[in-house]
Every structure is written in structure tokens, then in C-alpha cells.
Length: 232
Image (tube, rainbow, N blue to C red; front, side, top):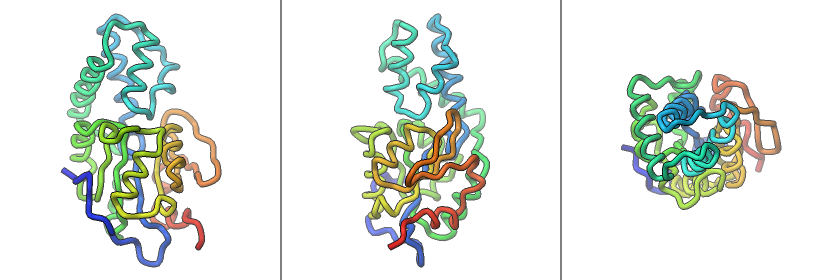
């Protein structure tokens, strides 16, 4: 298991202002956003409720406490947030046990960052138990640090997860490139002062200052990420 608190002072890439790359997990590196929605739909079906497909845009990308809480309120289901969280995590773990598809370009990008010694962190709103399962598919060797949603006091869209990751790697958030797939994750990274690459998975994301939007992770490589860094 990757340590959540690595030694400070991880070396940076020579000749580049890029100090680290921080990557979201669900929908960014692994094609699991649909998995979560399917599990949510199945759990609520057992509770006697049908989820409206329009709610998918509301629950994507955020912490489970927010998405699960919204679905309880929207459906009026007779279940507590704690009970529902257990059922969703169990359902997701069962689902990924049948195979976990990586997003196009994810394996190539991770291999390139590792080959060039770029400090890399996985920063997710998912719980630690889920991250550790997914890491077996991604390869824990690719990450100097992993941050789970249940390990920070405030998760995305707050800046805390990305600030924690930058501090753990001993780097300046402004010299970090973040790759995210949802507006919630983008808001978190931008609030932390990072340079952001948005690769939308479920809902569109508009370009903005310090934010570059691309249709696929296949367009993202080390040269691309280095070019995002401010001069000086």
C-alpha cells in the first residue's frame, strides 16, 4: 500500500518548472463513474426507488457524503447516510472485482511520469478502502502519495486534498499540474492554486484561466503538462 505521508523534498523534473502531477482517480484514470451510478441505482432499486438519470450530473465527482445524502433526500428512502455508504462501498468493491477498465491513455501517462521521475500523487474523493483496491489495477509503484476522501477534514470541492498532496510531496501547488474529470474536482484543484487539465467524463467543463480542457487523456503527456506551467 502506498504511504499517505511520504518524505518531503521529492526531487523535481530537471529543466522544468513542473514540480509534480496530481491525478484524480474515478473517471480520470479508471472508467468507474458509470460503475458508481450503476451501484447507486441497484441499491436504491432494492430500497424501492428508481433514480432519475438527470441526477447523475449532481452526484458525479463529489464525496460520498454529498452524493449519497442528495439521493436519500431526493428519493425519500428510509436509510441513514452511514448505512447507505456501507452498501455503496460494498457494491462498488464487488463491481470492480469483475475487472477495472483504465481510461484511454492512463497507463501510458503513468508509465511516462514514472520513467522521468516526476513526483505523482493520486488524489480522490473515494474512501481509502476503495483506493487501495483500485491501486492494484493502476500500479501503486506509480504514486509517491495517495490521498483518500475520508482522510481529509474537507474533501473536494474544497482545496484541502490538493493542498495536502502538494505539502506531502514538498512542492508548490502553483507548480503542480492536476488532471481531473469533473467540475467538483476542478474547483478543488483551482482553489488550491494548481494548473488544471480537465478531461470531462460525464458533464462538460468550460475552459478558464489556469484550466485547459481536452477530450481525452490520450492528448496529455509530459511535454503537454510542462507547457502548462507559468514562466518565472
